[in-house]
Image (cartoon, rainbow, N blue to C red; front, side, top):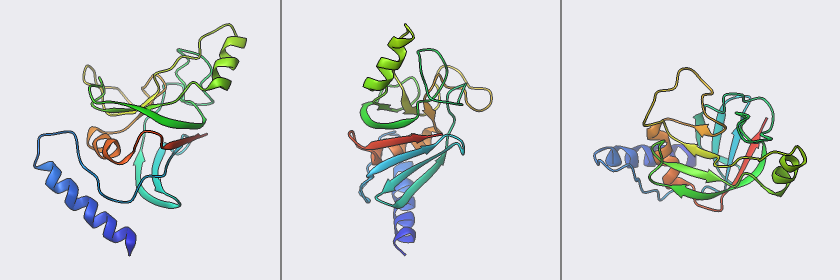
Length: 165
C-alpha cells in the first residue's frame, strides 16, 4: 500500500510540476538512502533502505564491461561511491556527480602510469548532439531528461551509490 500511495503522490507531483517550465522539481517523499546501478541489466534504483522508490533504464559508457581503470577507457566505474556534487548547468540537462576516483582508483591508474580520469555523473540527455544507440557516454550513467529532473530532486549530496557489474 505504501508503494501505491507513493506512486500516486509522485505522479501528482510530476503532473503539477509538468505545468511549470522549470527543470527543478521539488520532492517531499521518503528519503533516498542509497542508489544502486546494475550495469548488466542497465538499471538504476533509488532506494529508501530496502524499498525501491524509483527504477530507471540507463545507458552507460561506450565500453561498459568491467571497472573503469583509466581516463578515456569508456567504462563506467564499479563499486561503492557517493553522490558528491550537482551541476544545474550541465551540458546534459542536469547532473549529479559521483565520487570517482577514490584512493584505490587513483593508485591503480598511477601504477599503470596513467590518469584515472574523473567527471563521472548521472545525467540527462545531451544538449549538443543526439546519441545513436545505447551505451554512448564516456563512462557516466545517462537517463532521459524528465527522469534526471526527478532524480536531481530526490537524491541528496552524500547519498551512497553502488555500481555493480
